[in-house]
Length: 286
Image (cartoon, rainbow, N blue to C red):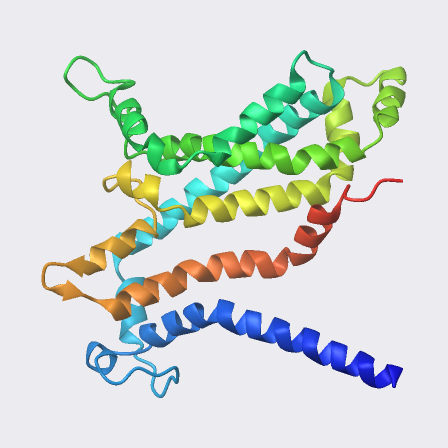
């Protein structure tokens, strides 16, 4: 009787997770189905079966130099932002955790509230800041942040850095401060403590911080569409170019969406064990 009840519980649990996974993956599968069809096939009766694969949707995008540039921009901006956010978050979190600064708890909370604000509220001030910060008279300076890699890299730090600090704080707090004190007694300085003690012990947390920051920057659309024109446009903003006055090329748009999804999936697959270890590190204390 007990064995039968366990089997029923396992069946219900796995059945529930299968249903949740199916609901979650259904939009992704529908995107792949649309990307595999021609414009004529898209106006037929909708179904979820891929009977033939219309490769031209992908070849047109892959061979397009404009979208190749968008992909390169996304890689540069996402990677640079993720590295910068991880380094700054590590230093900031170590300072908030180890040094008893006046109002450190308030600083941590205030930093986190920046992540809670709706991004659309920052659009107008950021647009004025990007276009006029380094402007000379009525002209434009070559150091304008608008439509530049540097502008988006720094902008994404504003929103990714609070999340990274919040994620790393519990991890740094879980590392005994006695290790720092022992290193200082042996003649080490703060740089040595961070690089030789904190960095190896917090490696799983740093890995998940790097990965999630990269994914957030890679998927961002609103600011990239508003604060870029051509030179720094990312692959996500390229989706809007398939909406024209003559109609929407749904197949090519779905193909770009699928290609945009692939790098994130690859990163998550190869870094899955680091993500699990980083999210659970410091969750349980002795």
